[in-house]
Image 1: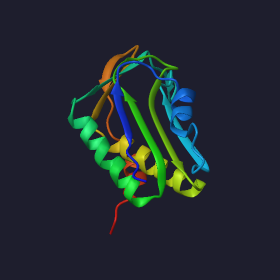
Image 2 (image 1 turned 45 degrees about the vertical axis):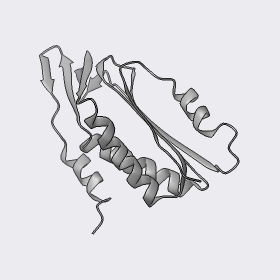
Image 3 (image 1 turned 180 degrees about the horizontal axis):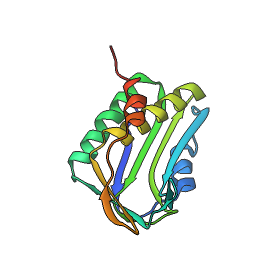
Length: 155
C-alpha cells in the first residue's frame, strides 16, 4: 500500500487529538503513532513573549515540506504521516506545528517524527517574528537546531 502524506499549512488552529484519530482510525496495520506538537511559549529565557508571527511563501512551503515528507516515507516504513504548520499571529499557548507518524513499530514512527521536526525547525521556509515588550524582532537560526538536523544528512 502506498502512503501519501497529509500536509497542511493554515492560519486556523487544529485539534491534535482529532488529527491523531484521523490518521489511525480503523487501521489494524498501525502499531505505533508518534506525535509532536509545537506550542507558542509565553516566555523565552525570562523575557515575556506576546506573540509569534509566522510568515511563509505559499506553494513553496508546501512543496518543500512535501519533499521532506517523501524522504521520511522512503527512509522509514510508515503507514501514515501528517504535518500541519500554522502561519499568522500565534499567541502563547496556541498550537504552531503538528507532526504525526504511524508505523507498525515505534522506532520508525519516532525516528521519522524527529527527522521531520528537525527539518521544520531549521530549513522549512517560514520566517518567525517574536513580539515582546521591547518590540518585535526576527528569530535567527540556532546552532543546536542545525546540529540536530545535520545528523540526518546522508553521507
